[in-house]
Image (cartoon, rainbow over all chains, first blue to last red; front, side, top):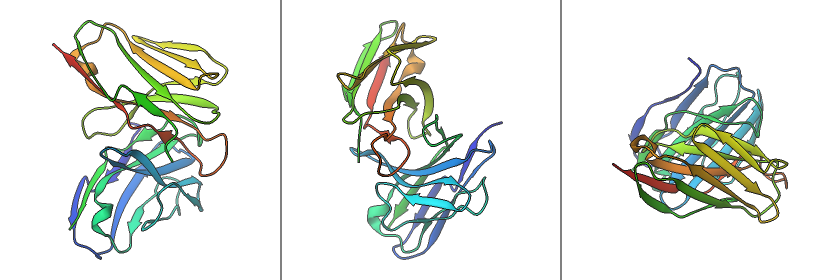
Length: 112
Length: 113
């Protein structure tokens, strides 16, 4: 089944404790992206990747890192999480950068 | 930065009625897409309309695009309880800057049985 898999689904952590949210897709998609969704603000793009070893900042990249060492994986790294990064995070992939996106089921992160 | 804005923010109708949602955007686009999100879940792509198209259909969905007014509408005909969800429009960024789709804040649609 074609899918984007994110883990974990829920994560509660404390300020400053490094964490990684994994994302994997099985559709051989070139393009991958991370979004965060907050009430009243909608979805905002954090980082995106056009292909392996090619990543770039979205609209709200501060406090986040990503890597794209393999085509299928695009982990999101929070080196020192802060409470303002409490949010619902979505990974998505597509054939090309403006093609329809396939979304994962989301990771709900709480930073205390 | 947000490109598209949906209107209304929330809409409640009776099952069987038609639901219309609107999206306005600011800069030129290559295509506009509509997505559905069931509560807290990932978004699901519904339909894509290119800038040179004016109308597109998919099952009970009808999308229109007016590039002169920088607006689009999504019509769901003969609504069902299962259509209850949030609906988002998304536009690409043909004007440069960061790449990928930008999403509006969504219309929350409730279908009353």
